[in-house]
Length: 88
Image (cartoon, rainbow, N blue to C red; front, side, top):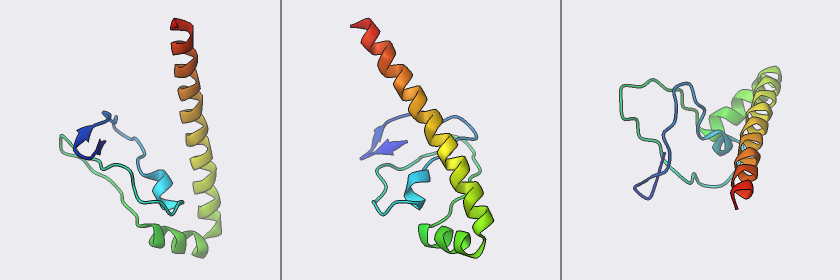
């Protein structure tokens, strides 16, 4: 992931990026640049909103999976905070 031309992270295969962009109204904060041949699925916010309005069951599944993903990310961040606090 890059922000203003700076390397921020290496993102492993099968990762989700930009998930908050489809549910929020803020502009994206970074771009992704593939360093090798890659496949991806992209959807614009408006298209996504229309899709879940037309198929509420799909929307429910998406939001459940998004909540699980965000919960796991938050748990990992909390573990990192605890680790660095233990070092100081």
